[in-house]
Image (tube, rainbow, N blue to C red; front, side, top):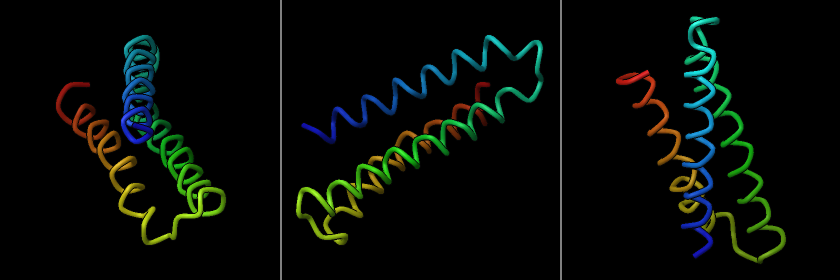
Length: 88
């Protein structure tokens, strides 16, 4: 359940990033690159924090948490890159 909610949060953050890109695209031509980079950096920080909490507080090992980290970070980040590459 937590993984699904975290993925939903990632896609919501990506949606905000896309909306901000559309709002600033005319004034700043490189807005899509900045927004994609900012989203990936912010999402990496959030998923890394989630992994840290899982290892230090929840008692999981890093080996158990790393595949979840890859899933949580990889899917929204890959979606952001594909969106920028194909649509924005």
